[in-house]
Image 1 (cartoon, rainbow, N blue to C red):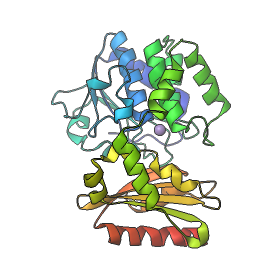
Image 2 (cartoon, helix red, strand yellow; image 1 turned 90 degrees about the vertical axis):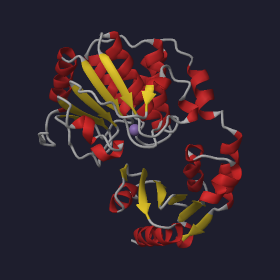
Image 3 (tube, rainbow, N blue to C red; image 1 turned 120 degrees about the horizontal axis):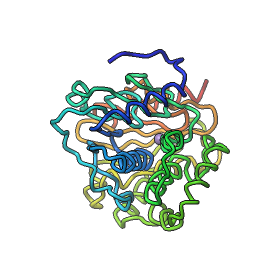
Length: 329
Ligand SMILES: [Mn+2]
């Protein structure tokens, strides 16, 4: 894999991807571990367009599609087993590094061209083609621009996928990454006539009983530290067992941590087998992507995450000491 310079002009990269799509027949698409609305929505929209263009597409996600996103058209075509064949192109969405997608190496080394489409500033430009737009609200917004450049008319179903990516990554047009362009893209998607209110209901107003119970447990665990600036949520394996909840039920739970007045950063620890999944959120300039990166993860300034090997209390102690130091500075 060649490593183009970070300064490569984005429009040139878009054009190279358009050319690649025109001349390729088989595509492998993958997103990041613990996939979110942006990953799944972007993947399904590109896949649908590629299929309409007569291409063969294989969709992969190492972790399952979250329950609240299973309503998206063709979500069930996303498989968790790595294909054995050879692909003309492998397109990775939302992956700062190939490892963010899990163990993709066997497929990537056989792929003709590797494409990296992302909006994370931690992106390592590992692709042969890198479309990395850090000012974009979401990968879905970038994908819309790609389709627009290709003169593709987005269908209603594709629009619902891209809208899902945008609405989830912007926290319903709430986070600062929401730009006039984001709203313009959303407006064009709405023009296709898909039922956006139904999509909002399914994403935001539907939650499994187990999900509500684990949310309650997480809120009960809330601790406020560092002079009121840091909120900490902690979930143990036993909480999940007791309530019959699964990790994907905790999506968005972290955001409650930012609610108490004066809190600048929130962290959630979720105990797993032999390791701990850690999620960070912040307001303003406090950079959580650096904290996540220090522990082998990635993400954005205001939202990031990592998985750290070790037991819950040891990991908690290590991460909290870094956070407290950051909040003192
Ligand atoms: Mn995203």
